[in-house]
Each structure stands twice: as C-alpha cells, then as structure tokens.
Image (cartoon, rainbow, N blue to C red):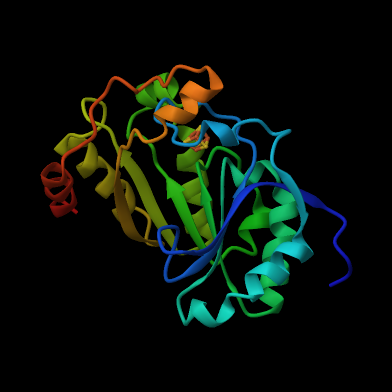
Length: 234
Ligand code: SF4
C-alpha cells in the first residue's frame, strides 16, 4: 500500500487489551461520537475535534510491535467513541492490518452503517444497548432500527458478531430484557456470542471534570450475583 493520506483522530491506545474482542489485542479508541448515551463511560471521546492525529500507517507499525502476543485469536480492535465516524481511516488501517495477516475487530454502536469498513472487518462487537425503541430514544438518542439494520447487514455478509449490552439496574436488568436479547441473537446465525457487561460509575470523575451531569450517575451498579443470574439465562 502507498503512503497514508488519511489521518485518524485517536483518543487513546491500549497495547495489549483482553476485553475488546478475542485473545490479546492492540486496541485503538477513536475520538468522536454522535450519540449521547446516558450510561456512557467515555464522555471524553465525544468531541470529534479532540484526540491525537495518526496515520493508518503509523498505527499499523505500532500494532505490529505486539504481534507475537496476538496468537491465533488476537489482533487489532478499533473502538471509540464511534469508530464509524472515521470510516476512511478505519478502512485503511484494517486493510493494512490484513496485508500483514492481522485479525481485525470493530466495536460499534451500529448507528452508522458503512459497507467499505464491513468488508475489511473480521469480527464485529455490536452494542445492542436496549431491546426496545422507547429506551433507545430516551437513553441513546437514536432509533433502535439503526443497530437492528446494522445487524441484518452483518448477517447478510456473514461477519462473526458478538452482541454486547451494558446491564443497568432499574433500566434493563430484567430477565425479560435478556431473553429478548437472546432471541435477537438466535435470529441471526452470524452471532456466536453475547456479552453482558456490568454498568460502572468510575467515569463519574470524567463528567465532573468536564462540568457535565452523568445522567445515570444516581443508579446503582449491578451485583455480581445478579450479573451471574442474567448470564445463566443465556
Ligand atoms: S456510543 Fe459509546 S461512546 Fe458514544 S455515547 Fe454511547 S457509550 Fe458513549
């Protein structure tokens, strides 16, 4: 590939992450998000004009430094913010990673569909934040049919997909919600995993520093026992 011309705005890098996709991964958190989820853990990623500019070439070189740790399952993950706000950059980075045999994984809200990026993505981590449209509109700021249409496209393309959902007490921590999520997964044969993640409030300090209200800051975190119960339904 020729020299990079597209710059990506990067919030932060994680050299060897184990939480965002299979195996050990070089994780790129991109800057910028069009949504304002009430549970958002990273309000510092929202502004598209923040972050540090990198070329895809520079990032690929960095990722390659860690390739011996990736093993058979690992590789690179691009997360955010919302990575599909910068599709040309993600496409170039993933294309370069493929040239070096690195597995590519994208972590997205599914609110912005982009086939050019899907075509170079080996695994999708798709956040289905709620299982009804009213909650999506109230707590995310988009319609639920956006991530559902995104999921349909992943199924058409046969892209292996992990569904993820943050479990928030009093909002979506019911058996019924998790069973609906399970039914959504079962209706899409490319979905091979569901991850339930506990709502956490460590980010309160970020909201405080930015002079913002954390909309779900008054809600409790879920207990380990309740998370285990919900996981057992899957
Ligand atoms: S999509 Fe992610 S980064 Fe954007 S507001 Fe929601 S939780 Fe935050």
